[in-house]
Length: 172
Length: 188
Image (tube, rainbow over all chains, first blue to last red; front, side, top):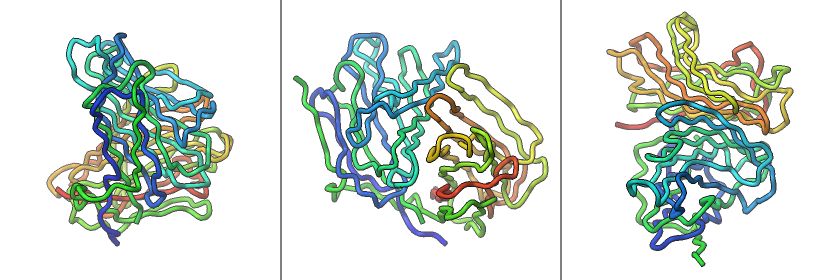
């Protein structure tokens, strides 16, 4: 019954210097799901920041998302429709009272399937900004297999030491 | 000017961490609409299970619902709590003495074609015969203007080892073609 071990690390990038974005490219279609694990922070001086993902360099407005978030006082929900990015999580900034990065885990489901639109599930935390805990579902209305991920903060740069790892999970 | 860094995922080799603790046990991808999907004869050789799915209901509505049950138990031995967001409001719900271990919204026949809800469900200590079974899940279904995202905990009040899991559509409809369900085992 068992088909064997999976959850394979495909690539890791630890930033040696600040970077405006990071790309995982030439992603093989041999897995079922992708999991992006990232620990990152932006050098933006604002109180809050987010990061976005684009698939296959697609900047057309065919992404959407529904989010659930809590800040220790209240829980809220928000939605973005027909946007040009999957705004996938929250980031700490340089204005934070500490240098703790955020943690995000993004599950990109059936990424190589060419018959369905692509749905991703994100859990994200940012320890000291407006939305401390965050869950999200995103949709990319394309049936193309995902072969690259572009990840970028909405303001500023990812700081040195930010780390991004992409895993592949295979089916039986 | 900050650098734009890139890395080719297909070119990475060596220095990989061990991948022996997460096994693919079974996967079912539907070639035709189907009322239920069952994973049976689940070995007790792992510590935890993880379910990963994308699914769409044949219900004539914009949303359907997917439920899971363990070991064929359709008794009211389950309970669950959710915190969820619909794009405008965050809410929390409790379901006690219900006949399913989890309940999630998925896209359905009246929503835009090719949109599927998705979920990742962890079933903890599933083979332990001294404990009731607890699960947690992340699940969501965005339809570009509607949809919902969930965080869920669930309880099955039974000490039996889980040996089978069945997915059904809550209202008795089918899962549509291309719905896909995968079961993984996580070693301790």
